[in-house]
Length: 367
Image (cartoon, rainbow, N blue to C red; front, side, top):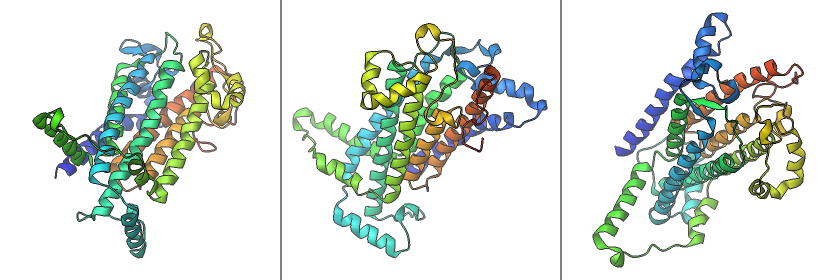
């Protein structure tokens, strides 16, 4: 019962955000002059940086506050990952024999258990698989938010004039709290109960009477190696999007300090070529833009947004595709970034007369 309450609470939050934020974006995207006033109103709330409407500066904050999202995202995701991983190791061990028997039974039944209809009488092995799948999803999310946090402090150089609306700021905070929770909401109550029991035991018995948890690196990692093909396909797609987003961010900014050089050192030659198309060669040119080239910029105007959608699609596939909560998360990301990419593309077209005519906004050959 508590599990269903948590799941529906998270889903309700996403549905509310869809109604409040995504529906207006969809309406504003309808190509008719009758909606120009409404479109400007929506852009005044949803816009940021160069696509923020000039009349919307009153309730704005510096765009460098983006770093707050990733600080919260890293702290929250790390806590969820640590608690879920600890619970999985202690309460949901997954041996090779159990996994093989579960896999054989699933195949005899006509399909993988990740696509089976949810059953209230889930077998212990199936439940353990679900727990370790949540660990895998949170691990991928941790990789993502950690990189974004590093970029926000050491890579991006926001112009002093770059602003974002305060409502967009609160939406970002909501996202980086709700997104990691969405990846493990169906097991969150039992994980919270486990952590609560561990804390209560520590308080009741004291440090001297509490047995230290046994840690075995192999047993902590090996269950992840036994996950299904969907998890590894989803993980591969996630990393594909992750790598391309990192490359596109390298093109969009000037990496001038030593830390960034170290951060990108493993493919320095490639990045030296890519950075020739950097939008900002030094801080004094922070307000000067040039047309970016390299990587996916050859096809779309906002490849970093496309890469974000790709990596969240990877998370969706790795989840098994049966959890409506993760579908709502993915839909929010796709809709929000598609709208932002469309506005960015129109800004480029207005700014540069020689802008490449073969580039689309975000989806190659489609939009």
